[in-house]
Amino acid sequence: MGDLLGVAVLGAGHMGADHIRRLDQVVSGARVAAVADPDMERAKEAAAGLSAVTVHADPSAALDAPGVEAVLIASPGPAHEEALLACFARGLPVLCEKPMVPDPTGALRVVEAEARLGRRLAQIGFMRRYDSEYRRLKALLDGGSLGRPLMLHCTHRNVSSPADFTSAMLINSSVSHEIDAARWLLGQELTAVTVLRPRSSAGAPEGLIDPQFVLLETERGTLVDVEVFVNCGFGYQVRCEAVCEAGSARIGDDPTMVVTTRGSAAHEVAQDYLVRFADAYDREVQAWVDATRCGEVTGPDVWDGYAVSAVAEAGVRALEAGGRVAVDLAPRPGPRW
Image 1 (tube, one colour):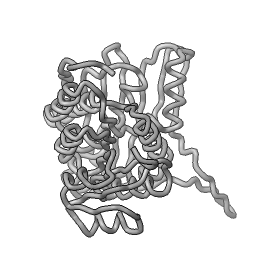
Image 2 (cartoon, rainbow, N blue to C red; image 1 turned 90 degrees about the vertical axis):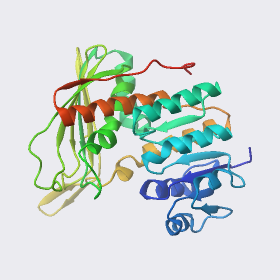
Image 3 (cartoon, one colour; image 1 turned 60 degrees about the vertical axis):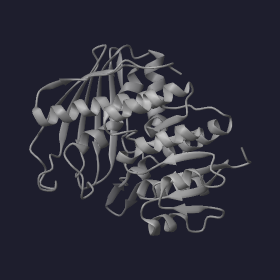
């Protein structure tokens, strides 16, 4: 491996372009060696100003490009399975944005494929595990001073949703972060999902069920509720409160700048997840680069990616059919790293 880890970035959209900037300007020990996107103009724009980088429409060509030693997948979710399996076939370590694979059947194929390798290659991009507030809450819960967690109350709000956003995506795209965060914070698998449907907001596009109220059950009896509202219109807000036997702890209360002018004071409200979780993304990618340069793989693994997809699928079924839907998790194959 060279002095700088050569990274191929698959996907040059909003997330991919931000990771290209991060690898070039923020993270140490890495460089962008290749960029791939079906939209070549978008790929060229994202790679503009970078030296010794090749641009491709075909992701396979990017994986085989000179100097590529690792891969960051930031393409749309349906393309992830093929890309992950291609990385495994080449022995390339990979950081894959969530969802690992949107459907649990495909996600399980990825788990099984990595298990056959006998070693970890993939880290999954659940970046909230790298957020300073979430890490403090995790340490507090693990320390036990608040007693057994009884409930998690979660809020997930976006200013607006993309044009192609569906009602199911509120769960399998947005709430997927809360699903992983709950599993990680509590150290428990989620076993059942119920989705309640309040009257849709006037700001929601026609036909979109927004907001939704998602209730998650865990294997040891903790309840997790999530208010997801992707067209709130005013800002990007993520909060989580743990209610335990001997106390509670809450994160996400907008620790931002307060601007005071004559007769008024205003809090800044983040408008985008790349603003709210900028530090978490930086830490996540830096940790991945550092581990990869040492021949290691850390962070959320492919089982975490599969479990989130399985819970999200149950949530979508609960949304569509109503009632409580049990989560069906397959036995975990291979070693548990």
